[in-house]
Image (cartoon, rainbow, N blue to C red; front, side, top):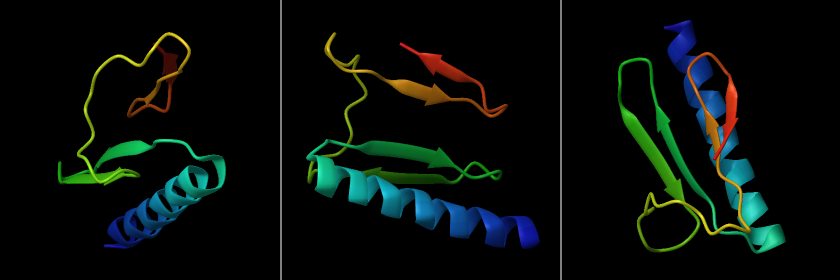
Length: 73
């Protein structure tokens, strides 16, 4: 139960930071988060649903895996 509470708090903070980044830096942000049970949570700074396509060459996409490794595409 404690892990679920921690996950929920950190997810809310992450979404809040994404919103702030979008607002203050005029950036388009999309987040996809899966809980340990596989439940999907998503955030998009625009009204349209996130479209998972490779970013333009002048943008960077960051993928964070379960073991916290970082990959640039």
